[in-house]
Image (cartoon, rainbow, N blue to C red; front, side, top):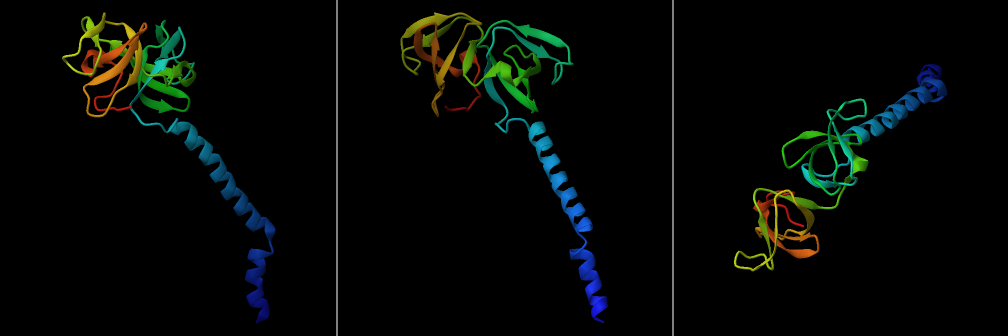
Length: 180
């Protein structure tokens, strides 16, 4: 009787090859699955979000990798882009003109910039419609976004040494209700 009870215990606990193999296989699966999940998931930052170009020449590719053809080349650092998807170290972006493609994360910066849209726009002394203009900027001029206060239609900006406020609707580079 004792032998019958001892046999299953010996089979489970004293045969290290069976138990160790199962434990090792489980650990390997967990260890292998986690890095793959982390890479595919990207940065974990919210989407969509705005970034800017870090370099003066950046390739916009048709897919997330160097094996994909270059569809467009940006030739100005600081241009704002909207990140709309992520795959490993690649970011799918959209520009102010609606062009979409993939850029490697090393070519992007978290610095917030904007690009003037439409006609010539005014930079104002305050975030109010009645404020006097500090400067006027033409379409496609880029600048730094300094802040976009909650509940305000204006954002504080810097363009070529001029500090002031612009209406959110006068430029591209900030989400509709975004504050920072």
